[in-house]
Image (tube, rainbow, N blue to C red):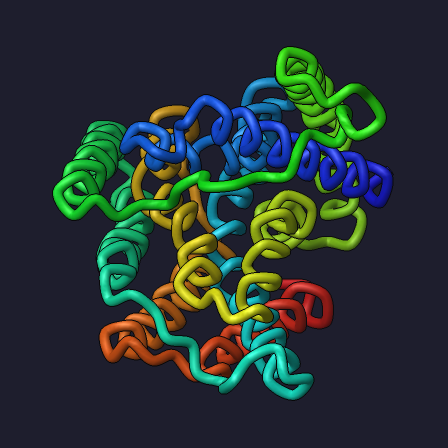
Length: 329
């Protein structure tokens, strides 16, 4: 059931991102500030679906744990596995002459979201230590305020992730290429993707709960590593391709665009909708993500990011997998 749900959510995430990026491109959202801010919200919808299904449709203690694990899982997977794979792609691109060097030259403005992440993401742990409902909601407001401030800051600098170009919707590849039909096909594809996301998410949440119980580990810890395996692949694939081809700022920016949401908007959502009771897996996620973000921030400020600087995260990913599956923590 878990394998089937992972495949279903992965397929749904791929066709959802494909449809939403094409619609955003055709509506010229990529050329506007509003679209630039909405783009990461759109592409993170698969993770949001899993979170909402876990909290509301599955409900209970396990549902909340899996929902919270989803919120902490995406930044951890992006920081560890995704960036590590981009580093490997950069090295391969250099070895087969698709790149001229193994150092990524990136825009210094990418340092802004990394500063937000390194400051705010560790603060997501504070409400769980205090255990006071009023404090929890106060932190939720703080994270929402930080998200609004980030939007304002990006508006001032006119720097954000844009939907500049996109492949045509998969549903339209076997049909006439007229614009009205393409838009209709994209909308139909979007609706199908949302239905598949819901069905796959519900099965996935149930499977994670059953599997976690059967092998004696935390549902939050298992969700933290399993859910992003299905939902984060579309963005990771784009980053891999851009890194391989030498489009360095696009490659790194495509992954950080959503990470800022998981340091501001989504923690606020979790604080308002869940009990926000965390365990060691959330703490490990925050520690690893913060350390990796600091390393990347150091190199981004220098505007030169060596391929091995991206691969530090792979160490954290392997260590976490060992902790989860070998020691059953």
